[in-house]
Each structure stands twice: as structure tokens, then as C-alpha cells.
Amino acid sequence: MIFVLLPLAAMITRVQWDAFLGLITSDSSVAALALSLRTSATSTLFCVLFGVPMAMVLARTSFRGQQLLRSLVLLPLVLPPVVGGIALLYTFGRRGLLGHTFEVLGIQVAFSTTAVIMAQTFVALPFLVVSLEGALRTSGERYESVAATLGARPTTVFRRVTLPLVLPGLAAGAVLSFARSLGEFGATITFAGSLQGVTRTLPLEIYLQREVDPDAAVALSLVLVVVAVAVIGLARGGRGA
Amino acid sequence: MKRVTTIAAVLLLGTLAACGSGSSSSSGSPSGSGASSSSGGSSEKTLTVYAASSLTSTFTELGKTFEALHKGTKVTFSFGGSSDLVAQIQQGAPADVFASADAANMEKAVADKAVRETPVNFASNTLQIAVPPDNPAGVATLQDLAEPGINVVVCAPEVPCGAATQKVEKSAGVTIKPVSEEQAVTDVLTKVESGEADAGLVYVTDVEGAGDKVKGVAFPESSSAVNVYPIATLKNGKSPDLAKDFMDLVTGTQGQSVLAAAGFAKP
View 1 (tube, one colour):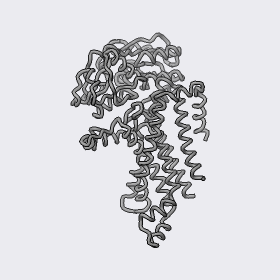
View 2: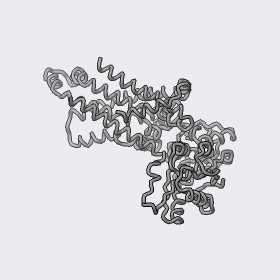
View 3: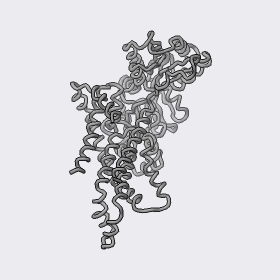
View 4: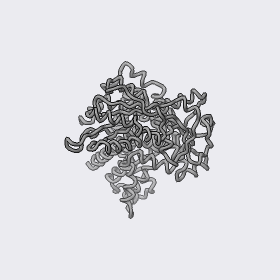
């Protein structure tokens, strides 16, 4: 516990309180924070959209190669984010696997906010899948089969039985995904680049400020910590109520 | 109970991922640990050199030359961004020699009284336009980079190569609207290499080092921002004599010819 708290405390002692407000309300800081919150929220939405079906497949079916599929889904968890960024670049980049298709359609992914969201979704998706799959397995299939024998259609079962049962697991997964998106750095800088208001999220801004103004970097780090704690706290409070 | 275990597992995995991201994002910064520990007994001496990333290939080669000249000496390098290296030196890193990619960071070390003697300039570097080998946007001059619809990547003004970019833009009266302002010159280079960007502003030596993966386009305005590389011996170092010898090697004929081969100009 001390191992986690001591560095945080040490950072707080380095904050220049008299200049704090000025440092965190500068144009670049506000732009970075707004971008971070916006992209993380969007990424979380995509994580839920993609993650729920994936978790259902992993928890409710069994087929050959399922174990392998699960490992592949979880890969971004253990992969260094930079590697994820490189993989995304060679898939969606201009000369990537799908790059030509995108070019024909007139879509340019690289250096856009879309790229930031893709990078965040890529690294955060496993958090949602893991949490939800665990919740699905724990809740079991008993209620679902009972509902089905009583004549409920699969969609009704999912909506009325499965979903309410695993809602806490889904919420926990979404919070973790959001937090992971908020902190995402490696894949973003590799795949999306860094431009104020477009692709420079808070972690990238912190890393850049460190070059010239360590005080600003520390102040922004504290903001990121506060936001992260608030998100986790909110989710916990929401579940307790 | 089972749910608790699941959440714990997720949190644990999260920690692992966070560790992963930490180590990867710091891959650009040097690993100073263990650099000072002499591997052998008292007979083997260690020289620790902190040098800017752009010196990686040239200094590695000079390190081998130095080891051949001084039998029983091991040269350990820590390559990284000059500002990162200065920060570590200020925190007491046991380095013998510091070679910076710009005067500003060396001045920080001097102001901190970390250097033994006055730093010596040993090389210089100018900017060049890097384009993919087939030059899809047909870039031929600095002015071309201001054309709309071409993807230009530069360094952020906060880092030395970005400061040089701004200087060049100003003296040429050109305003480039980049699609990305990168943290390091290597990030600019990789975006050009992968074809993601149509052009990027990097140093001559970066173009040279990238081989045929990028093409360099020289432009006359580059002379308005010449980056000078200073080198100095450090007070924290444990082998002052060896440090002086290494500095002499770099500034001497042998060092200068290795640097010139990599595209560096005289200071």
C-alpha cells in the first residue's frame, strides 16, 4: 500500500500551489483535458459495444479454439501499448492493410481524433471483456434457461434476465476501460501523433511539458490522478447505492 | 466471493498492463541503472557516458575504439533525450562524460556545477526534409511544406528539434501547419518511414541513418538553425582520466571522421 501511496504523496509535495491554477488552466492544458475526457468516454462506449458480444461468446458458448480466442482477446492487456500502436498503424495507416480502402473512401485515420479513440479502445477493450465474462460465469445460466423454458425469446432473456444480473460487472468493466483510456499513452503517440486539441491527450501533454516546464507536468499529473480517483469513486458509490 | 476474485484478477492484470505501458513509454529514456557498477574485479575499469540519442551509432562505434585503445576498460552508454539525461545528472547519476545535442541542456549542467571543465563543441547538425522514398507529395523545397493537403510532421516547439524548426520557419517566412508535433525526432522519422506523413523535418544525420527508408531533401534555409553538440566531463564521474581521454577521442581526428561519416558537420 505504501509502495503505491508514497510516490503519489511525493508528487503532491512537488506541486507549486501558488502557480497551480495558472498551470492547469492554460490553453494547452484545458484542451488536453477536454480531449482526454471526450475520447475516453467515446472509447468506453465502443468497448461496451464490442465487448458485450465478445464476453457473451466467451462465457456462454464452447467451441474448439475458444481458449486461444480468449488469449487473443486479452493480448492488449499484456502487450506494451507501443506495440499496439505499431499494429494499428500497419492496419489502418495510409500504407497499412486497410489503408488503401480507407483512402479510396476518403477517410484518413492517422493524425485524427478517431485514431486516438481507436488506440484507446484497442488497449481498454480487454478490461471490459474480462470483467463481464467473469460476471457472466458467476451469475450462471440457470435463470436464463428457466426464462427460456417459460417462453421468453433470446433477446428478451438477454434484456430482462442476463443484463440486470451482470450489470455491476459491466459497470466495473466500463469504469476500468475508461480509466485505462484516460491513461493511454504509448499506442496514442505511436499511432495518432500529437497535436494540441486533436490528438494530444493529457498523458501526452504531461510528457511534453516535462521537457520545458516540470512544474506544469506535475500539476497536470495531479489533475489526472484526481480525475482517475473521482471516476473510480463515482463508480463505487454508484454501485453501493 | 467468486466475483471478488474476478475483480482482483482484473485489477492484477491492470497493474501488469500499467507496468507494461510504463516500461514501453520510457523506452526512449536511458536506463541509468547498473551503468556504474563495474562488472569485473578491481582490475576492470568502467567509463560511463551519457549521450544524446542522435549519437547512438557514432558513439557506440567510438566506444569500441576506446575499449581497444584502453585494455581492461569497459565503456557503458546511456543514450536518451538530452533533457532527460541532464535531469538524471542533476539527480546525481554517476556519469563520467555528457554529450548533449544542444547548448541549452549543456548550459543546465554547467549552471548546476556538474561539469569539470568548460564544455567543448565537437559536432553540428542541421535540419533536412525527410520524405518517403517515392516522395508522393513531390516535396522539393521548404515552401512546399506549407502547401495545403500535404501531411507534414515536425517536432514540438518544446524539444530542441522543434525549436530549430521554428527558427527555420521564421527565417524563411514559411508557416507550416503540421498534422502532428512529435515528442522526438525519431517519432517524426518513423512517421515518414511508414508513409503516414508525406514529409517531416529531421536532422541530416537522421536521414543518413535511416538508409534507403527515407529520402532527404536539403534546403538552403536550414543554415539558420545550426545545432551544436557540446561534450564535457562530469564531477560525479569516478574515472576523470578516462573521461578526459574519451573526450579527446571524440574531438580528435578519429572521432571527427566517424562523426563526419554519419553526416555530422564540424561545430
